[in-house]
Image (tube, rainbow, N blue to C red; front, top):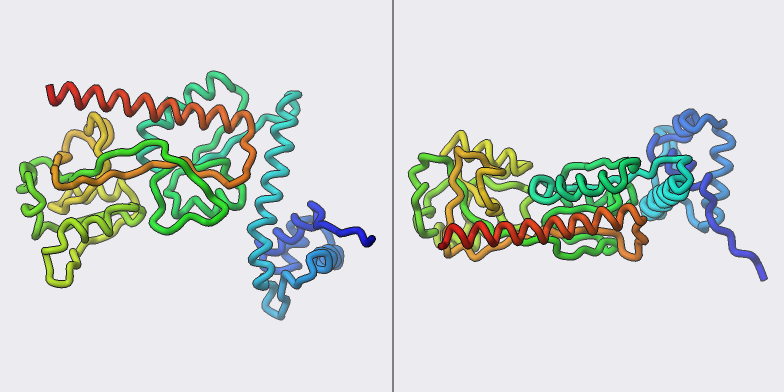
Length: 316
């Protein structure tokens, strides 16, 4: 029976260098090996997989369809091997383990600091890197294994099939205006029929919900708005202009949004934003990653309890 061959780790690393550098010559220089040796490694990999991965011409190298498919898996393999190596070496003190997680703005202010503080007390020698951004931007890095997990809102597009998630926290969404805005004391959505809106392009709810909530504004149901790339850009517009927006309601609001804005409690806006923990399916979390995830869950639960107490006091 003929033995089945599998790609070797050096072959995978050689292929990734070619994909990143765009040519065999540049990849060979980066790797510190000769171009003929790199070409031989690539040919061997392609023979093992039974498909051409790299197309070469006078302008350089480009990935074939098969190469595009393999590159994501190859990055995941390389990152998983590196992660496993560091975790095992950390047991003997030969190498410090390192976690890299993705976090969006709201969780990074409400629950991540508490979870990270607890984690670093328990594991002072473990490296930790927080990568800011929204799931729509960071999900590819979770797919290729360069992130351990990701905390943020539902992405505006469907998550890749390799990704799963579960609910971490849920926040009500309300309208936000600057202090002194003519609509600061509005109580109904009808009052905002002619307002100018600003929304985050990363928001999973703003763009579609505004259209639904104010569909009577125009005959075609389209509500004009401008889009910006972050929550902080939304806040800048709100504070400096008469634009209005919608944001997650937190307790107390000034802790995140400052004292120069008002978050309006419009009862017609029965809207909530979910914040989830995203991870790769069938991925085995390291014990350090599992501890940090547990800390995130506890911090989210604690925040929900504290917010409930604050709301109860306000209504009393």
